[in-house]
Amino acid sequence: QVQLVESGGGLVQAGGSLRLSCAASGRTFSTATMAWFRQAPGKEREFVASIGVSGDSTNYADSVKGRFTISRDSAKNTVYLRMNSLRPEDTAVYYCAGLRISRTTYNYWGQGTQVTVSS
Image (cartoon, rainbow, N blue to C red; front, side):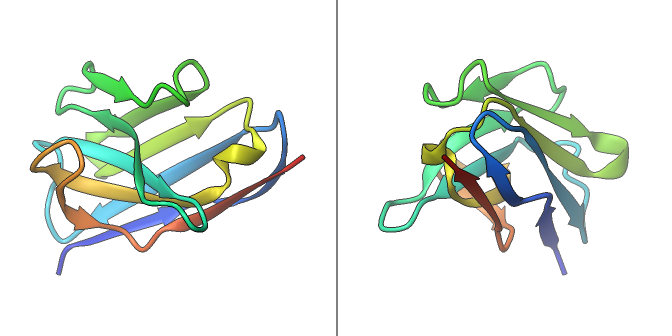
């Protein structure tokens, strides 16, 4: 059974930092594009960042460019999202996704981790 398990979410003050982790099991994702999405209350899920197989190819939503960094450790089958300079508008449930079909469509999804940024 394939699982993506996120961790690292929590409550942080504006300007603070968090690092999210996504641990995969059940299959290797070393040959798959991985991504992070988020969904704020009352809003649709939105793309945050993605990372290619080699780790050299990354893409970010304009709203997080320069503040968030996606990375991966293929040996650990794990993807990370480092979030700096957090803002209240970053508050959302963050989801890990694996095996890209299109920019917004992935085969596998985690259960999500809550990130709350207080002002």
